[in-house]
Length: 404
Ligand SMILES: NC(=O)c1ccc[n+]([C@@H]2O[C@H](COP(=O)([O-])OP(=O)(O)OC[C@H]3O[C@@H](n4cnc5c(N)ncnc54)[C@H](O)[C@@H]3O)[C@@H](O)[C@H]2O)c1
Image (cartoon, rainbow, N blue to C red; front, top):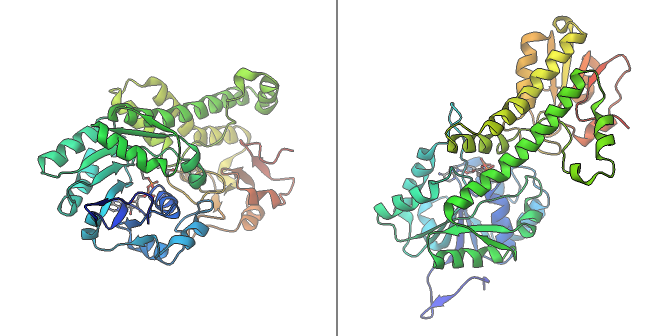
């Protein structure tokens, strides 16, 4: 029997422990796999039919360390996929892990989440616990709670944000403390008990504090990357070797060990959540906007520096790596694509390659190295270490990937 299952008057109230809505996504799927491997009966509901089919066959639709093996152990046993949303009423917990993108003016969109909750309404069962897992704009949980009440849904709502780093989800679900928030003590207690199945550390906050805490997690990381990129550009512009300075300043000096190395800071969360914080500050989050200008400006900086050295118009440029970070197949908001768009306007030809992401116009890494006059290491995938690059090629390596 599942570690959570309790009976009321001898009858099981819900036939499954949880249903993960958006359960084939990068947040939802590792979470569903983690709970199912702990013996909970988990359902997955997702609008993406292709991803549903892939997962049903025991295959991960994206890279995530250790997930495929653990998926294989539970699929069609303690982990099942449902096509009919009516089946969500069987679960005690509904975990909502759907995407929360920004609109074109970089503001959060409450309407998207409300629409998803509206779609769930007909299938909600009395006494269910809804756990909002997506990263949301502060105040969203409160609004959704009011929305549920106005529509007569007799359910309990909690906000328990996801803080894993992509690629390490399974390990971090069990090693990171879990922030839990809700509007009453019973819901806090029940949600905490659920997450104690994964981690012993629970941190209780008010919903709006938890929403802001999650944004701060990502905005802080984004700002530290921006600091590193700003220092790099500053030194580099003066013709100085930033790596020597970095090594010098960080050698046995404790108060700078957390300074990251320069590189593209992108992906589906850091930029988005920094902009959510900017919206929450009525666009007075100057530090966040400065970080955005610095991080998003790094591709432009690379091109400017190249133009000081060569005439790009008759040069072929190759971009090594198109996913947003090394060893990942996630291309969302990758700065490599921004670099490509900028270069397409200025260079003779632009070649792209990636071992994990594909497009019909991509070439192999070997072909790219062969055909390009200039090679930019945009995403430092380990596979590129093996490449042999002729001495006459100009290599732009902001990550210091190739330096011994
Ligand atoms: N990716 C990360 O590392 C990460 C980390 C922490 C938090 N988050 C947050 O988690 C949320 C989800 O991000 P993600 O990266 O997993 O996104 P994703 O796009 O990989 O996954 C979302 C999934 O939800 C499905 N979906 C969308 N609307 C649905 C609906 N109404 N009903 C059922 N399924 C629906 C989509 O088909 C998709 O499979 C976002 O708010 C994000 O900011 C992401």
